Image (cartoon, rainbow, N blue to C red; front, side, top):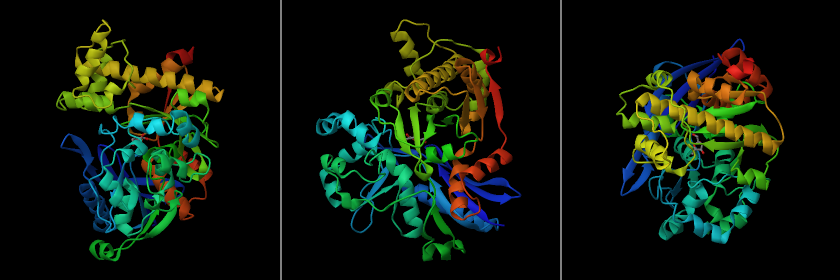
Length: 465
Ligand code: LFR
């Protein structure tokens, strides 16, 4: 049996998913899971990259313990964050987490050198305060001087495993440093933000073999395997793992990424004004999408109640405490508030509107507001692309939230197809299987996904009329 290992690391947890293909069915087994936490130090927020690497290794080791040795493996994570290494290939500092606020004071400075319009025209990438371009512009002078290597988080983990450095394309596209047309670094942007082009590596496409495990790791694990870089941006994988790639896709996790797969970047003013992004996708496609604050809000609500309520319980309570007021989930105040529940309540109080009190009301209000923001993004998307869609395919962990799916179907009057919930790990493994010629291409991959994973259909009340 040929096994393939997809290591999918999100902002709150990481998983090692082992796959094999049997009679056209993709079988999947979670063999390791770990918590991924942000570290708070000196008023800043970082990722514990050393802990992350140790967990990556422990999960790989599990393959040996269960006697299922993968033919290859690949890692995907969130986007925009990176490490800088010095001439001795040592970390110059722990990687900052994208919710760190150090970029806020530098953004205007960057745009004095390159306007937002110019930057969007060149890159097609949405404006987010955490884009790597602003993060790099915030680096101290001596750090920039000493930096010899730039690696995105999955690039770094792949480097730790193989000793080889590359910059994978889909994740690199979120730096806002690549040309939307060539997929290569745009040197004019590097110049204005004063970043040495020499720190970057070869940009490789998803599905590229970059080497085997380092010798010492082979000795430690007791086996060798190939490292095939997948689409290392988790959202790029999630879109690959969708069941219906011509529908509106909604990757629902910590973030909600709502958009469509296109063959060309759309850098029009309309796209820019609605802050749609043209993120790099598999085989030269673009994911024309909008970032919506997502289930982060409910994760933070759960934290406010000291995790007294599970996510399933929050949905149950929400159904019992309908609260119809909505708030703007994309308001930057919800990016990292001290106390999410108070922040939501203050939003309503400031407007002299009825304020949600009960935990169920808070939860309903979050789901309802998210569904509203999806509906708004869909209206924008349909207007920009001048196309009407009948179906929304929700993928990722959030697709299991039936209340959110129902609200979405009702509000949009469209059919909602929910699943697969493991789209990200599936997309990761597809990159490996296609590289290994186990699966021919994305067309066959879609067929396999349909045969292998359960999906649920929702038709909003309005849809049934
Ligand atoms: C989702 C995601 C989004 C990206 C955000 C920050 O996990 O990768 O696509 O905008 O995280 O990196």
